[in-house]
Amino acid sequence: MELDERKRVILKTVINAYIRTGEPVGSKALAGMEDLHVSSATIRNEMSDLEKLGYLMKPHTSAGRVPSGEGYRYYVMNALHAYHLTQRDIDRLISDARLAGIRNAVLMAAFVCRRKEDARHSRRSTVFIKPFRAKRI
Image 1 (tube, rainbow, N blue to C red):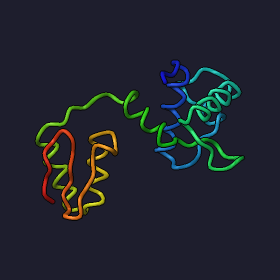
Image 2: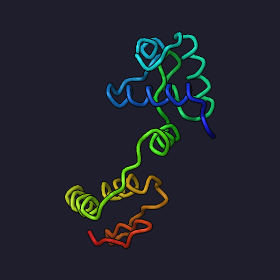
Image 3: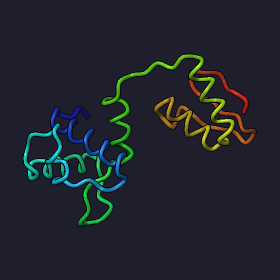
């Protein structure tokens, strides 16, 4: 679903704040940020809509909101600028993955692919990444 401009800005701001602090983000905290020029009540309503759409969630009743998996996916696909990986970047990711172990390699590959369905591993510690060839780790 395509979000309107206000919802996109609020979602991006919530995700950025959550990444920085690791704490649920409330409407009052967002109202004080320079990107948003609306009241905390308006932000609260928009956050509620984003929660209903599956982009945000509340860890408990009295908490602020945190991004859901779907919220992060939307952020990566729409709010971030595209970055094209060079072969050197891919080689470095593979090298780093080798050091980190196979589980992290799959997670990194999924991040590169932007979809977990595009990266998987076999019991032989091979990471398969579409559209790239399998790399032995």
